[in-house]
Image (cartoon, rainbow, N blue to C red; front, side):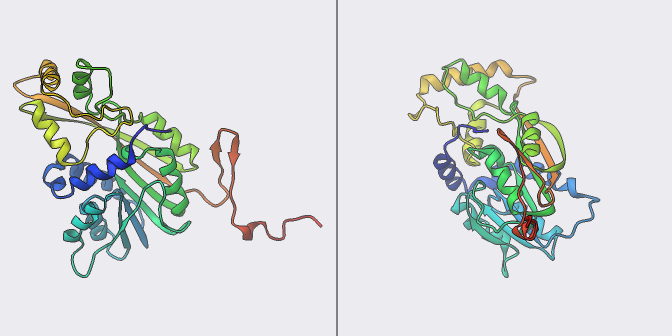
Length: 291
């Protein structure tokens, strides 16, 4: 389930945005609150929580407040984001900070009770690999809670760029049905998926583009044009975006998918191209050989 993204570009873009992210990430903060509301009413007292793609730590701090007895880990690919998270961690730190890739978590098998990830999965080059890592580190019955963007996200901006050239300028996002299939393929049980559609409005297209850069959400497609966009070319995009103007403002659509699932018991198979693959602790196999 490769997304065709450039991890080095993503790390640099979000690293540069560390000091400006929170001032512009209003949508991300709102989605994070709605995501955590999915746990309202759930009888759950996690011991260890990891916030994957934590950014500057607002969500990690919220998790610490919600589960004040838990050990919370803020994990992000961009080191400057974790440095900025110090303001939320406080002294003594409310959470630990770890710089790592969601697709290669530096955590032991079955060591986490809750994996929380707000609007991070869409930046993984292989979201399926990230889901496999989430399953690996979760204890049996542990909770996976994440949000990600769906394919309608920034559809107006994508269409405006398409009038100027045929190369990708807006990252591609995964359909909700494919996310559900990937959860089942990874062996998660009882997945629940929901979606929200948000429409943000802007006075002009350039303001939207500046905001995207301020939060690090730049084009990470491996097939993107690496040169700077010329003024004439950019003006064609701006003019094309004007066709979406309604009631004096320009809309920007965001499709948000929320997912909640439980980690399976040991031995629960995961689906693979060659069939089902089941894994068991070695202790489960001892003494089972026929004599």
